[in-house]
Image 1 (cartoon, rainbow, N blue to C red):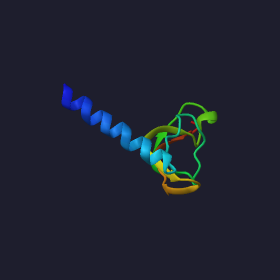
Image 2 (image 1 turned 90 degrees about the vertical axis):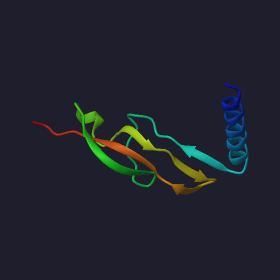
Image 3 (image 1 turned 90 degrees about the horizontal axis):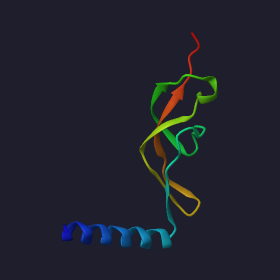
Amino acid sequence: LEWRQGIEHIHAQLLAVLERSGLKSENPEPGEKFDPMRHESAGESPVESAEQDHTVVSVVRRGYRLYDKLLQPARVIVGIYKQM
């Protein structure tokens, strides 16, 4: 649909303007170590190995930075390893 393409184009232009103004999206990768200075825990999920303990399992909400200042931390699900 043409209107959808128009909205997507406007969205892309807005994101480009914000990036040029110093706003950056923080989207941690699964497996990345949980960092309480950059991430906010939205919950826990069991993981299968000790290497995955306290790592990002999934991202609930992206975070944002303005230059070096954290505006909103990324909300993530944190992996917790429990040995049985």
